[in-house]
Image (cartoon, rainbow, N blue to C red; front, side, top):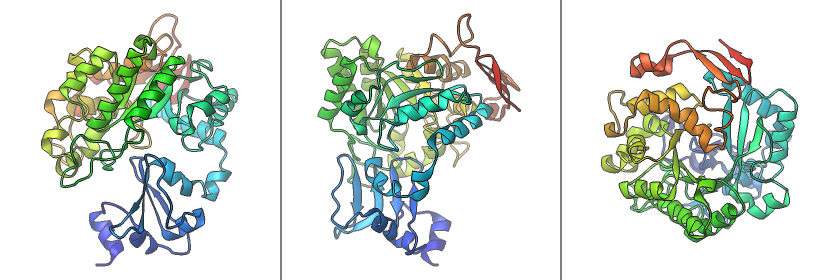
Length: 428
């Protein structure tokens, strides 16, 4: 069996020069991992990007090396792999305004009228992305609203210099808050953990040091910014909560900051209690449970720790607000599928296996998590998230009532119509 046949039949833990150079040594090859935190490239891609054998790792990122110190072709964190991706000709020639308009045309089929962009500027590494978003809105062709968060890797000074401010924009496109990132991806083994991963000595990667996270959180919150802080591993969530505590101790009104832990994946009881005390909410990438639940159990954490994934019910019992999200492109932005996953917690690989049955929630709670709770987290509860007089006329007509069908068929309900601001933007 040759190397490519083996990859097709059993998969690989990582793609390296060995695998990708077997595909081509004449053309650059770049592959983005579904997590968005890892990427893989062949030798030609490194050559074209001008990345030398002695390249230094950016802060919170890594060009992976083997035991002898040689580059392998695996790359961790976007601040590293963007050095290659930005050399891709189609990337530099694409029309970002048209690309954004085209993307949002597709999402009415899921019943979506408002979404969050949590890495504004992260791909281009430029505050100019704020202008792209505004330009798209001015065409009058956007089929969904955007609530955007400038990304931390550009630096707060660059965003301030560009004149980007919290609340800037209108009901269609608005700057909602600021995005910080504590760690990487659990399934990519870059989420920051208290204990090493299963059968490993690695504890993951801190994308921002605990001290840098604190300082930046206090500085941004002190200037009126709402904070969304990415945290997957339990050690990362410790760092996020320490940063939120620093914000509170600086005398900043936490009710105005509305800090949110994005993904909030591996969560212990004491961390839930701290979230309640500090006024921190959660947004769960619930389809981690569905698509990666078995892998979390068998390859990433072991069964006991895997059950700490996306703890919707215990967060709800503690009085901590939460929403559900897809982290597109990690999973499809399908609210009905998210609702079903939060209600059943059944895994894709073993359909009868329920990961953490004591974390299932009601259909009503799951619906709130993708509507009113999400709107509150985006500072948009005054305009969307529920059907009330005075709010924007957004509504979705479904084929069936999610509360009245078998829980494992919620995802199969068809979206018949999607209306945004009183206008139909999708019809089946």
